[in-house]
Length: 411
Image 1 (cartoon, rainbow, N blue to C red):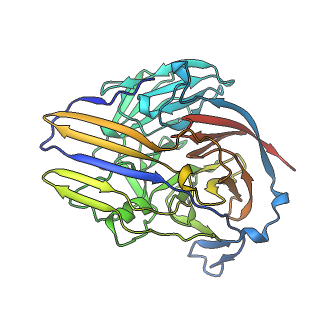
Image 2: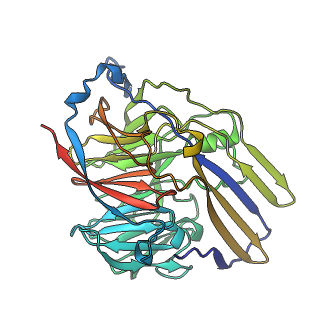
Image 3: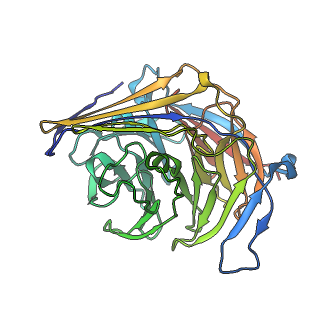
């Protein structure tokens, strides 16, 4: 398994060390029914969901296990992932898995057989430094968010460079392609970007044209009145609907929203929870002689990913209960820049031997934001991806694997 952490030389004025400890905490409960603001057409619809009022047996879908791809202890290096973070599917049904910790993309056929490796650690064409996301356009070209190289790389299906979009404004976390060639992305969440504007609350999603220029920013963050809580509490995931709309779920807020392709809020939904939302104490930020040390605040987690199926139904990974202490894991990120040389390390903390849990569920919502029911699963979930009737659940830090299911109708 490749776990290289050394970076080539770069030119920077001072040495900075950033240490972030982000604990992946759980959060439970679903939601359902109830709307308001119908009389005011100028305002988005607000849905207050109460799961106790929904007949779980009427859920229109179920899932069937298909296969697991990858394993932390795999003897075949092609299946030995380290911090995998994204999944894409091409028109032939081939699966692309972004193996972030190994600076590469692993390509598998529709039945899970290894086909090719795309990329390696570096700064050149087709090379990555801990890439954060990937997606495919309508021609099956690969778009790879490479935030530590300040760029988005566009490659063909064989990994050859087509184009590079240099980024000067926002860091890129998750990225998705729209049919018209535009790109939607959120900002990176693993590192705190410290600057003169560090207290500024900026929109959370951005729309870029084919040249990489930001043409629209939307999704308003919530102000917790604390720098670190704002950075943690506004982390979010998003997915695209078949009609090009954008649905957003917040990791640490009781908040699900849908936006039009032009960034207009269509509806927002919450659900009844059996736990408190908000920070449980403040984080810690220390600055001393060019050194920065960050400890993120502890917060209950409301979701772990969002996806949309072919019927426009919204799938949100959440929890039926809070994770127990022995179930928690976190990631420590270390970056140092000194004498023109940059190094980075990622380390998972916690019980990675524990692979099964009854804490996670998949909540399912109608296209208009009403809760339909949930599907229990027995794994830890760090991401949700749907392509047609194929559902992929990501276990990023424990098993370092992707679990594939088939979505079936119960009607």
